[in-house]
Image 1 (cartoon, rainbow, N blue to C red):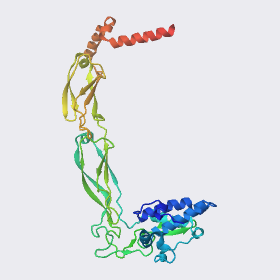
Image 2 (cartoon, helix red, strand yellow):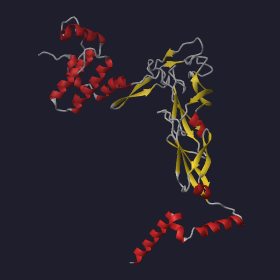
Image 3 (cartoon, rainbow, N blue to C red):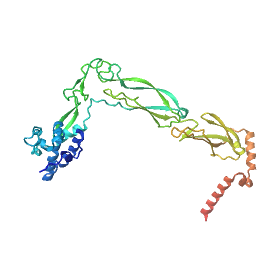
Image 4 (cartoon, rainbow, N blue to C red):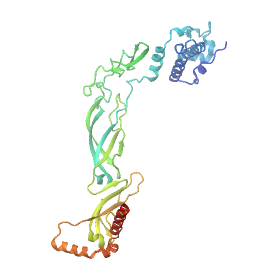
Length: 380
């Protein structure tokens, strides 16, 4: 009976690498394993085919022979029959632990002796509103792991070399059989590094990194807002085993301002005016982040009216458009009046009698009419 192509059995291409072969075998072997398909002869047959294909293709010499001569390379009496080690009765001695140990471990193992990227860091920077709006250059001081200048990150004393760990054979990992499974653990001899440093650096004690303080000049662009982050590449912690450094993130916190409140790219402020100014109108000076500016208050201005001053807000960091300054006027009641001032107010009050309330106080007239109607409706 003609045997099926090994590559088709595993569902891989002829250019597949060892990792792809093992990954496909693991998936199919778990699906068709006899222990999971008890009494299913078709699954047992399929599993045998998968196992046979895997044993041939994972071995570089057997795979080369198969690619050149096909299945005939492993026929009895053939020149390549010595490559075949397939046992047709293997189903009784192949369990899940073999698959987990040989395939899972190899696919997902992370050799610790490889270079590792350093950790990212975050620095919280507090700014006042003027600094956030206009931007600035600011020095910061951070304490972090940096590459050792004496061993250049190798961890070994100058001029000495590291030796491969004999316990894990340089992988940094060992396999421990625990009942049903084969568990991968960090090698206790080399602490997962894969190498033994016989003569460690006296300054970093073999770690390749030293914790020390460094100064960084941070450029804060104009328009940053609360909770914004600025990324400084490679300014984080130094990597292990000469790995690349992580990044440093500057998180912005803007302090509360005594005058202005920021909403998006607009600035808001409250401007107190006396009731004479509100009634008669006039010019007042209002603050901006660049100094003061005059605005005109029209006659009969009501409390809470909002005045918009164009392009006196914040320059957007993303759209480069400038927001506005919005000034809300609040009419202030005078205090600490002298007798003469009180008399003048009484005269004003008398002049604003009931006959003139509709003309001088339209809002008051409308309000009290609404109150009267409300009580009239209750008594009906």
